[in-house]
Image 1 (cartoon, rainbow, N blue to C red):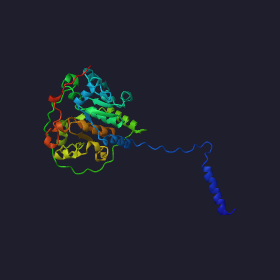
Image 2: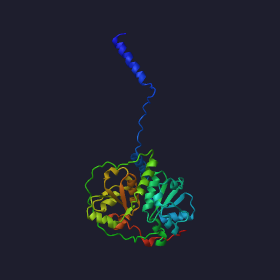
Image 3: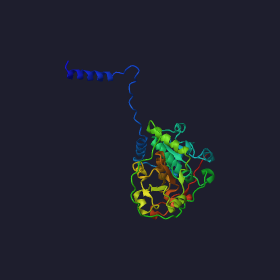
Image 4: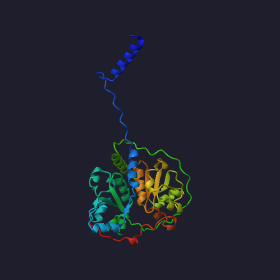
Length: 327
């Protein structure tokens, strides 16, 4: 055998030997690919955002469905058990807000129906809607919650807003474009999108953060130029252009998943919309993604309810229909 043929034979034998597991030596296992929870949740959010969502239902429309005993709806009250007992919409079941991502709570939902979520003023119901829609349910929130159903604190469970905005100033100047940031870190490793959504929601509730911030507190933050915060308007661009909170950037609520890297994950994000409903959905998405976000209670209507700046009249106690409840 010449030298060239000998070397070739040796290499061939070594290759064959390498393909056989030797006794006592375990074959190398393929490296498991880490599930991308961030990408999965963005996809789940956009599946909701990009399909013309109906974020709210009006009290009159829900009452008509209740009267008709419409089997296409399931009503879920996310107030505390104590406040649910004060009085609730006929047929509504109770799943307290902090438990909405628990498996036991999710088992109570009917995936074949439109789930109408009811809270105090609409904000936590909207946050719940965001989580459940990302999980694949069809959900919508009762506009203004029980405050839009009855004008009775002893049934709603909390003080009812007067509906009058604070009259704080707005500006039309647009902040300089911010740089693109790395998205917030999602530390736990999840096996699927649904597990990520549930896990991140539970982590949010475990932190014990208030879901909302008042216009008065935001005013203080804006006046003192507190650099720990960033404000984002999730109203439509035309409304933003007519007037917004000083320093606020603009990301329309249905685009929040696509543009999340415009927000600094190291700052607390303050989100506001028109009346607090869609802002709550955007804020909840950010919290699921590992940001620290608060929704402005009442939205622009609580800051300045002047229609000339793109706001709306917002909540009006005089128009609450005082519909029936049961205990």
